[in-house]
Length: 261
Length: 247
Image (cartoon, rainbow over all chains, first blue to last red; front, side, top):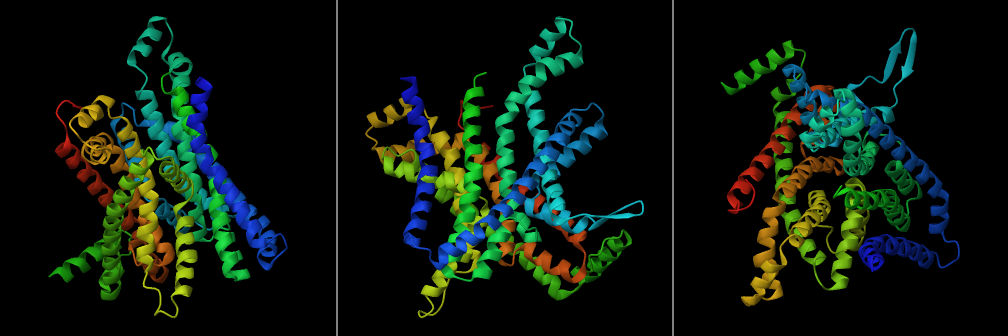
């Protein structure tokens, strides 16, 4: 019975992905008519380039969320600091970077950071994709800070008191009792944030980073066929979907699982 | 008088190392102000359309007709899990191109980039609104619906006169959140050369190399715009508040 309910709940949500994949495959087969046509030849030629482009998106998103996750909790704690100037500065940082459009931050990082770094007598290149990563890490850290602050705030104060009455130190209470619960509560929204950042990495193509969308544009102008242009942009859409949809499904599953803990 | 004040302000800022001289050039100032207006128009048009689409999709999502709810579900999942910029390219570089080709003999394509941006962002954010509204619609107690049915409301009337007004109040904060995101998302209009504030700023800074200065203006502008949306949301929340719910 429980299994039936689960299947009934999951199936309508898995179906769109299956339908999309099958339709895309069918479209390819029908268009190609099983024989190699100019379209399928071009697609086979360009598909690896698209996948390499996608790797750049994944690289940027993973690094940005990693940086954001390292800095974010610190900012979240600073926002709760008893020292007023520290608290205000941290809150302003969080407000500023949560409310700024991602595209503006990407332009900001690309044009305001130097194009090479001067380390002693060496000049180190500062490539655009790293700048975009930093540009996306700014809102990521601000968002993680808010998640962290919210998670700490959601643990009942009675737990601090109960743990203190068991003679635990503040530090022990935090790392053994509060933090494990916070991490569990933060996981679903954190994954949502990661999916959002992954989708924002498509903006990197606007500042000249060679990513999936940039590869698609290059492929489309190089091959210069109407059917190929249609196919390549929809494949781009599909590739992002294939990457982000499982994350979103897992997030929904975890949200349900932890909802009543 | 105003010109004097402006040039004085620009001089003071120059002393601080900020180059806002473009404000003194009439054409560039006009372009920047025009961009500002375009972004506001874009935001308002998109907010309106996205809410309409969101309500329609939400109604489809809770529909007992399976083909309706499944097609809405498929659309929502596809839209939520792909980047808006890629959707914009699919719409503008693919659909718009095909349309232009098809209408070549009939006097050209009447659809502007502005139209495509409004359409794509409305559909994208409409999917987010729909998810919020669906949660609200499903949170309405069954007894309320039974009461409505016993008063002779049909299914459609129940949906629009009972469920929607209640759901709207439940999910207003998350709708406002979506609208704030929507305002921030209008920046992607610059990718297909709609003359919004981001596009005009790019034009100015490629000429004058004053990226930081324009960036500050952009951040201030979007900060103000999102603040206004939030303010409007709070006002609506107060105005629509039902006695007996919340604080």
